Amino acid sequence: MHMSRMRFGLVATLLVTAASLLGRRQRERPEPESEYRSGRFWRTFEAAAQAIDQRRGWDKLPIPLGLAVLAGIRDILRKTNLYDTRKAPTVNEPPLLAPDTRYTTQRAPDGSYNDLEDPAMGRAGHRFGRNVPLERTWPEPEPPIMQPNPRVVSRKLLTREEFTPAPSVNNLAAAWLQFMVHDWFSHGKGDKTKPWRLPIEGGDPWPQKPMEIPRTIPDPTRPPGHSDYPPTFLNTETAWWDASQLYGVSLEHQQRARTFKDGKLNVGLEGRPPHSSSPDPQSDPTKEPGFWMGILMLGTLFQREHNAICDRLKSEYPHYDDEELFQLARLICGALQAKIHTMEWTPAVIAHPTMKIGMRVNWERSSCTTSRASCRSTSVPTGSYRISRQWTSCESARSASRATASFVASFT
Image 1 (cartoon, one colour):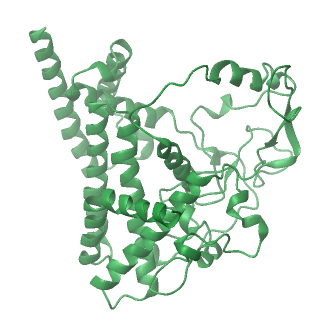
Image 2 (cartoon, rainbow, N blue to C red):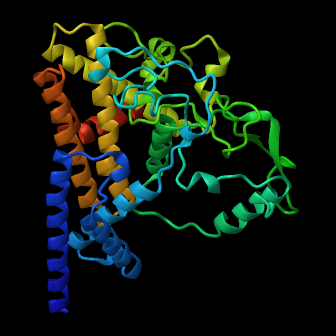
Image 3 (cartoon, helix red, strand yellow):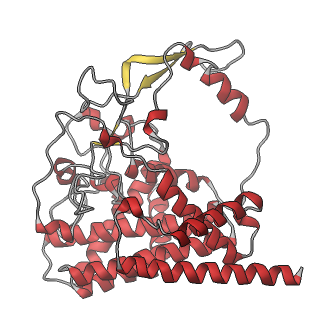
């Protein structure tokens, strides 16, 4: 047993060391995306990682080897599970925001210019990509697509017969994930004029018979009658981790959320979010699909957190105007959400030592190397970068708990 563990450790050390060295060389000599880690070593490394995972499972390996296997699987998924739907013809696509040097240090309101080489990627109103080859995404026609009945499948597979506790999490885990999903993607409210109708069997307690589910809205940027590609769909949100559930996905939404004083967001009575910042009743947040108290709670928490960040920045940099305070506070607040998800939420849901180390390495690499390089290559003040790092690295847990306690106290 001891010799077996030594061999595993030796293999892991060799794999991790070689991957690190070659990865460094490749970062120094970037290759086109289609050739991402396409050399012989990487192909061998990924094949070995996949074979080990399928035979043993990464979670059953010593931590160093488990990390190496996860790295190989991640590369395989990056190469084989991302398919661009922009190959399909496009008409009447909304125009891209005009280029602006501000977007090298600020978020564009609609999520564009996060990738300066592909400024439209991930903006609100962009097409969803696919995780399988496009030719395999043609939908089944009706009525075969309704067999078996999705309602019957859900009841057979997901009906809870007895309560199974999850001791590492609480209800906030579900609220947090839904809050993040509201930042990343949405198909919109759906088309209620032509809903899916699911038959309800006898004994099913569902009150509506048949069950009606709004259909996903078709992609309006596809030319009519063009059937060479399968259907595509648009993301109404930005695909980036930019806290758009707080700041909106357009300049109009962003302006409604702001006070235009000291960079802060609007806060309603007793410190709670305004019921709606728009005269349009359709923008009422309580009418959004999936709304519940958990979403309201986290929205309240991060609105207050944004304003607390603005207070801290203003005390450090009293010469900053409203726009500078808002934009920098938005970057910090978005980074704070990303850190909590990476370093706290994910390790709580997947409570495995290898995963905890992997997520920490992932965060530290992205936050230390990418952010520092960005600050050196743009006009972000080094002092602002220091405040941002201090806030996200040292204060995330206590600021979140402080804001949560304040929120709970406001309702008692």
